[in-house]
Image (cartoon, rainbow, N blue to C red):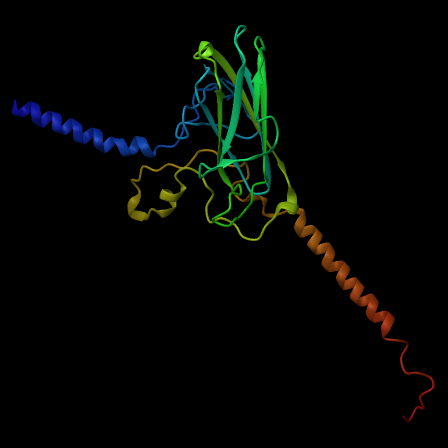
Amino acid sequence: MRFTRVLSAALLMAGLAAAPAAADSSPSAGPSKGDGTPTEAGTSFRTATEIEQGQRATANGSAGDYLYWSFPADAGQRPTVEATVKLPETHAAETWRIDVYDGLRRRQACQWGAQTRTAAPGTSSVELACVLRTVRAWSEPWADDPLPGTYYVRLTAVKLPTADLGVPVGAEIRVHSKDMGGAAAVDGSLSEPLVPGIAMTSGQGDDDSGSNAVLSAIEPEDGWSSGWWSDRWVWSGIGAVLAALAGIGGYALTRGSGRPSRVPPGA
């Protein structure tokens, strides 16, 4: 009897020790096809399937489920999220919605796009889109501006009829960005991008090599804050050259031809 109690206590302590490792683990890319296309979606922020910009991802689910994906966005980019939901042949009117959240899990407003759409009965598919605001390199703490880091996409049905609850659906999502250039440049930058695990990893010392925090596996192709160079530098240089030429021209026009002829040589 005593041996059984000791064994139970040991198993309980082992389970508690393993819990932080599972809680701090980063989202996985999930199953994918031979070409690397993800074929599953996560069911929460922590399990969101990671995708790269320009990559197409698919998933099968049921009406009423929450489907999550995540992607990286850097400063100067204006991300566009597009989703297509494939519906069964027979269904009632369904309203689908796509939401985008930043690395702090703040919902980001869409500049334009069909963020919510209602599929009429018998419609085979419904398409959604959300064009976000330009990602800023820096922002005030009280502001709700999009910042560099991981962004989460949530796709779900709202106002779903009871008869359609749980019917199988298919989803396809695509993310791409437009580089806005120097017009969107701001002074200042974040010390670290807003990605899962960045706070714990950047704060650990040399003695914390055994930390369970893992950074997100996705980032821009050229690394974070890769867009420091923009046409803003070009226009600044052109403006400086034009200002210098204007100064030289103004001096040449106003300095005259030398000593006036009406002034005596000895004066």
